[in-house]
Image 1 (tube, helix red, strand yellow):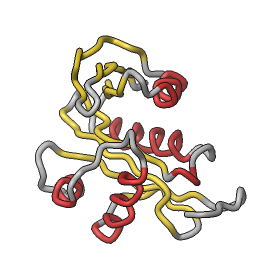
Image 2: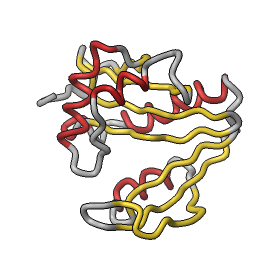
Image 3: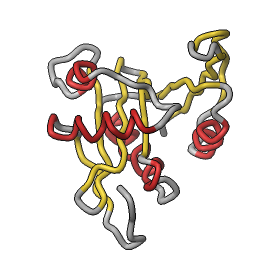
Image 4: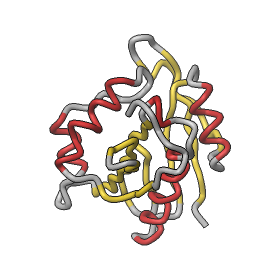
Length: 158
């Protein structure tokens, strides 16, 4: 995604198999995003998979610009990954993805959403706090390459 017209219509929809090459390319282009294998993404869109997952994409101008995957273990869910393509950042796609996944999660009885983020990822921490998440703890040395703490965040869905 090299250029985005501000008037471009945004569509949030379920992730499907034909999205996976683009989803993986977005994740691979972002150093702070988890780099999952294709089978991991295939499992995320498998309706019979365990744990159950909600996987959504943000599409703009006919191209996937971002995605989110949440694992559901009612009454809780965990945002496992969320990413927006670099050139598409700053247009509200991340917020739109989170709001959409929150609505999906509420429909299946989720009342609380958790996630973790690298302590050094100040942009993500700012974004999640803006979205209403609160820090509830840290996991020391959780991340590798480089070794770093994970900040644990939670949000009560209303």
